Amino acid sequence: MFIPLRPGLYHRQLGADHIFFDLPADRYFLLPPKYVRTWERYLTDKASHSDLSRLRDWNLIARGNVEGRSTDLPPRTPTSSLFDTSFAGVSFASAAWTIWVQRRARGDLRRRGIYRIVQQLERDGLASLSCDDGVASDVTVAFRAGRRYVSAADQCLVRGIAMKRMLARRGCSALLVFGVTMPFSAHCWVQAGESVLTDPLDVICRYQPIFSV
Image (tube, rainbow, N blue to C red; front, side, top):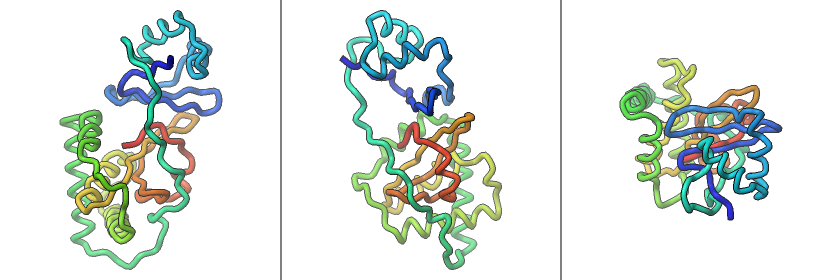
């Protein structure tokens, strides 16, 4: 019997380090060294009843009679980035629209928090998993142009939510991916298939996915 992580908690192992993303609390944390052996027995289906009890006490795994592994597939490894591609110019109106949707996303994050926004993104997910190349290119170019007028520093989540919403309105399915690396750093980006839309490819290659929506 394999008991899953508690709802809203996601895990990624990088070397000897175990990183967790607590989505409802909007925080990342590193597993303390004293918990590692117990956790690694859990990962290899060798956890004892006392191990499982400790993991519940540490609020890492589900409580009650819940069992089963996650069926969520990880995002495909990106091999290209539209952000790196040269395109013709974009209108000021298109760039200005990206600024507006980012301001709206920033306000939503302040009022509602990341957990409720992710739940909404999941509910609003498109039935089709495809993304038209022309739509993806148009939106990428507009967001890239918008960076001339607003700072992109430390705005990956706002930008990612805004872009995913804009793509969905145009019938284009894409993932908002959260990634981590060590020494610890976190980043998120929008990805359609194997192509990154929000960042240069070399930036994204530093990170390993921990969660996507």
